[in-house]
Image (cartoon, rainbow, N blue to C red; front, side, top):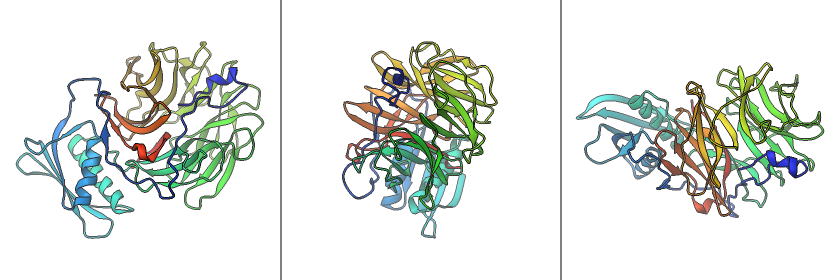
Length: 410
């Protein structure tokens, strides 16, 4: 996990203690690894889930489908006594999968041929349709991830699918890179890098051409770029006027206006799903806490999490606008917590044996991707915020991975 609040004591050294990713020294992309359950991360002893049977007509489909559904906290895979029977088969074309869902003794629920960009992507898209048919909630299997890795010896930006397949290195800055974040349409990434100088600037990277352009490079610190849900604006933190403050500009890096006016340090601004508000972190109260304000500007309101004297790294759920996930210091470590805007109540939803940090919502408003950090290692996991189930996405052989950003598959 990185924290921007230590810079007051470290001469504006950005993101002290960052959990930087390592993909290892091999030349080949990270290969898909079998999902693994963390075990003692589960908070509730009774998991509220539905018994399903998942099978594939080929070994590849069977393995990938079971890997995906193993990560979903709403389901429990069984061979007998299932409520739904979910089957996958080749769909005819090279990137097509047939998905069939029946209830009980064979009542039809879903039967459809699904196309994808690749065979893996087609399977994940088919799985998402099955999830929707069984829960009436969107699936997340076809999500994409952008994250930080250090396969080359320097932290660089990588992208891949949710289950660590089809991973490719996107940047070759040979300098500190941080917080890659998706444009809503999936065509671009915005990220922070020390590529040009010893100070951080914000860059936009076109994933089609791999062309990188400077988004903002003002005097001082330029960090934490984040697109609005419609892709028309970007929130960021700049210190060109002397203090790290929240700013918002258009998607071309112009018409940039200052939104906060404090003596505190602000960081990690995120838009609400409708783009009308921002949530961000500020140490105005003496330690990092969460605040919201109108995107147009005005007074900031502190969220009364009442959990910790350290609350940071927020992400606002698009699927459920009443939920904000964040990182909280709990005891001697860090855990994932969720704040409910309706009730005004926050609760810890992870119980990682070490640190659980850097949460990013998946499409259903129930699961998040987060970084599990311990003893010089960092890996990516899925967490079910309703029952505490955590499933590992990246294996130890993949090296350190961190700072993931989720692209909604829809």
